[in-house]
Amino acid sequence: MLLAFGNFTADPSVNLQLLIGGLALGAIYAVVALGFVLVYKSTDVLNLAHGEFLMLGAYFALTFLISENLNFFLGVFVLLLVMLVFGLLVHYGIMRRMVGQGFFAIVLITLGIATIIRALLLIFYGPTERARLDLLPQGSFEVGGATVRYVDLIIFGVVAACVLLFFIFFKYTRLGLHMRAVADDIEAAAAMGIDPDKVYAMTWAAAMVMAGVGGLLFGHVTGAIDRSIEAIGLRAFPAAVVGGLTSLGGSIVGGLVVGVIEQFANGHLGTKWREPVAFSVMFVVLLVRPTGLWGRKDLERV
Amino acid sequence: MRSDGLDLRIEDLTVVYGGVTALDTVNITVPPGGFVTVLGANGAGKTTLVRSITSLLYLHKGRVRRGGITLGGESILGRKSPDIVKAGVAQVPEGRKLFPNLTVKENLLCGAASRSDIDGIDESLEQNLELFPQLRPLLSQTAGLLSGGEQQMVAVGRALMSQPALLICDELSLGLAPKIVHRLFELLTEINETRGTSILVIEQNASLALQHAADAYVLELGRVLIEGTADELRGNPMVQELYLGGGGEAHTSYAAIERPGSRPDAHGSRPPVAES
Image (cartoon, rainbow over the protein chains, first blue to last red):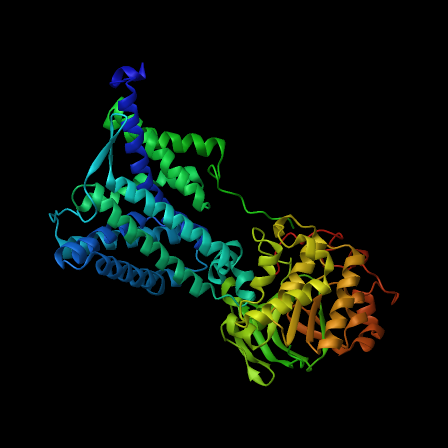
């Protein structure tokens, strides 16, 4: 009955196209989810401003790469540097004062940060700024009757590289180890001489840089940069939750799964089914596995 | 390796949580290379004392109202906890507080967070494995899955990774089999004697702590009630009555001691409410 609302088709090339589109969308979700997970894992904060971080990244990309017309690599470097500074600003200006406060108080603070970023972007960029990011190769090629864009492949590569980088960072560096220790037990970490303040600052900086990467990539697939970009935060939320808010690898798989499901809902049922289906998947996963597919409950034996 | 322990001096320390006074004009001294124990029941202020020394009160909304704390003559009161570890204070926290999702090796390495000499850290790791050979095959195990005794060994080893001048152990005996607790106390004595590390042991297990420590303090409701050498305290009728079960006989278990107004913890269980 449900299918009668949509335009269901069994045509393999259409389904292949939906799969490719879904994976491309999913890769974007994965970048956003990675930012969510990074902050949640390390600081125990559910950052509702991450979509706005990404928006900030997209607008700054516009400024440095299009308006200022910097060389691509220099522009990306400046973009990520500025994002890093903003990340430190978020920590030292705001979040630092909230350490030790209640979970919901902190979540509300992130909502406040989201509002401020949206307002500032409105003030400095105006409501109608619309331009395109077109710095990555725009072409495409055909596979089995489906079109694959170069941009999507690049996004895939960047996401894979980010995941690998994070994995190496957390597993093999001292700062990565200290970040995981603070995530496990902040008081014990402080008692060992790890400075939670420094770790948190690095976390927010890293999340902002990830949002810069995400904004740059997402800006290339949305067509134009405008205020609707913030919605990516909410749309990527099911991806982060499905993967498990504490698992970096899970956020990638969660992103891809939710992206593909959304595209199929979009293609077969219609655009308006996209978000209801994505959130339904999230609900089902939460009912069956409250920690998400790859999230883990803290091991504790006392 | 640091060969000399540093002295810890706590002078007129008063600590409050909101309006509640947890420590009231407390004076405690650990001489350089000394072995001191602070005894007391739940709620006596023992953990608050540890938090004051290590600057972790802020995580519990507590603050020092009055007094001073010095290590080796330098004030450490109010300095950030990483600086205090760097100054030479390491702790084995109450309830062990390992990082449950990290491996044993990673837990140990976290103990060296204040150090930057990579070779020295490897050396300390090796020293720890000689001290606790049981841990060697467990290095890549997730710490949360170890037994209580193994966890406590990791907790002690982790604290030693910073090469402390002062080692603080908070309720080392809690929830562990008497045999393991005895072994751990013997190790503390060994570390105290061979490395010269100053040791401060916060304990409910009075008889065991008094066997190993040189000096002792009894904390009650935030005040120092009795102080003296461990021998003096063992002979003190009040200490015998309240903490050693009356006969002066050494008990290895606090559960054997009945005392009005205190919570008699069954051996092996944690107190239901965290002490503040």
